[in-house]
Structures are given as C-alpha cells and as structure tokens.
Length: 211
View (cartoon, rainbow, N blue to C red):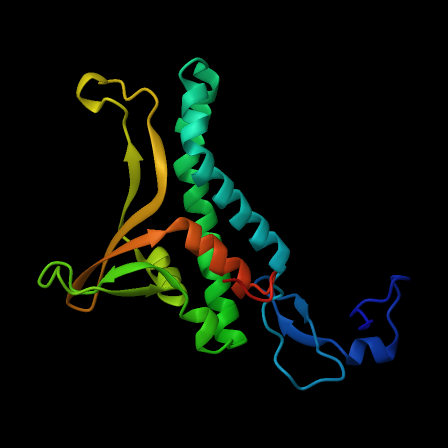
C-alpha cells in the first residue's frame, strides 16, 4: 500500500514533510500536491471500469425495453411520464460519460486496432456535399461523434401516427442519429446503441472478447 502524504495519526514527521510538494494556492497557503512513490511512471486517470460497464448495461436495457415500457404507459400515466421524462436525458448521460471514458482509455492504454475499430454503425463524412459516401462508424469514431455532435436525433416510432396526435405509445429504437462538422465538412453518423454498449463493454475489458 502506498503511504499517504499525511499519516493516519494526524502528526507529520520531518520525513513526511519532505515527501510533499509545496505550491501556493489561490489564498497564498501552501498546497500538498500528491507525490508518487517508488515509480517514475505517469499516473493516469483512475478509471473504475465496472461503473462504466454498468451504465452500458443500463443503456442496453433501456433501448431494448422501450417498446414494452411504452405499452405499459398506455394504461399508466406515471410510467409514460417516466419514459418521457428520463429516457433521452439518461441515454445522453450514459453516452457522453462512456464516450469520454473510452477515449481516455484508448489514449492512455492503446488496445490496438481490434477494439477501437469495432463496427458501431455508419458514418457519412461529407453529408452535405456527398451523401452517398459512407464509412464504417468505428467505436473510437463513435466516441468522437458523441462528444462533438451538435444535433442529436433519436429513432422514434409513433403508432398510428396519422390518427395519434398525442403520440401515445411512442417508443424508441436502438439507433441514434448524430450531426456535426469537422473542418469544412458536415457529417452525419448513424449509431447502433446496442453495438456501442456491446463493444464498449469489451473495450473496458469487462469481457475478453465477443463475436
């Protein structure tokens, strides 16, 4: 176990004082910046991978159960309000959190092309000028698009839309449409939420592999 900057007893010795990097804070008081012991390696972000995989599992459950939840909402205003009030915001929260976590993981501990290049949908890199040009939306690029998207569209199904102005029973399919720009090019991405959850869990090393 690596020793703490401050001993549990609350008293500092001369040796303890020498292990602390002193820098002035905003108020002029010295701050005790953590010093690394027994290593010259950089200390990366401490990522608890299980927490991210749990979020990916929640994402998987939400998008696959949306239709069933919506059917219960036809007879329960409370259930309808929960899906209407939380589905989009919770999916968005999970995607942003996991995309950032995966990008950090990829940059700090390169996993090679296998996990980063997993197929998560379609990418139209020049959507405005060449909509026929399509590429594979890799897991790494999916993370980039989630982070940089300026326009996000969910894939919603409205039963009997022509005669259903209140959109009762509306539910979501496990796809997301993302729009943004890179340089002078406007792009569009079709993200499979199931594949993002699947390959994201593999990349976090929760599972060794998947088919």
